[in-house]
Length: 342
Image (cartoon, rainbow, N blue to C red; front, side):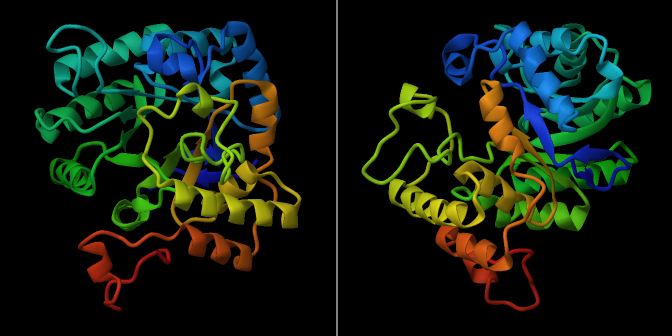
């Protein structure tokens, strides 16, 4: 397993972490993701640890807390050997204060997550989304208190716009508060908008990238091809609901290029797609998911080798989309270099 530094922190994380959105299967959305119980979770965690994957990612809203509960139960006796990240902000109840990033909600949310996980600390605590109604100073001072108390080790942001993240970082610097060290965002061969603003920002500010849904919400498994709609798996069962949009023609072109390169390197399509991401600048970690051991073993095959520069360039070319304004306008100015070729 390879380890990388998480942003401008001293924490080293494996390049792959295991996402537990498949644990529990409660609710209309998460029932389509998976229904992993404690016994199967233990098996998957054993497999992860055997391969050096000691980082597990969850969230309070995943199956309304069931994901955290199952992860905590499956990790009993092994907590000191692993890293855990979880998230808060989204709705966890019917009351007006059961959502958001207010001091009131966050303090309750972190205590609830600690109970469900059966631990006394969270290694990386993410704000799952930006709360525009709560001042960033209130959010960050609350998180700083949690870090100082030892209940949280590091903090991160997820699904923020670029200005949300920069405003928060500036407030932390101005007030001397704990800083976001990681950004967890959507990034894939069929979703490269991350490169337009967030990736340059995270590189400039020393914020490490953790990638969620690296296979484009399950569309880059190789099961969806031109003139061959998905007939099995989560997408076929309606699991694309709530996921990032993608033009089908663009998807088919990217999958065809992936398939060609997969044959060249004797790897699977998902392994090639994941390996491409691991070569992007600033990527510290990719969150992989799996409903069973076979899927997990396949995803673990994404490391230990590298695509050639030519293969990366071919994937860059087929997946490139014209940026929206002002990013297309900035592309022609050599005083504003970009970390990747769009």
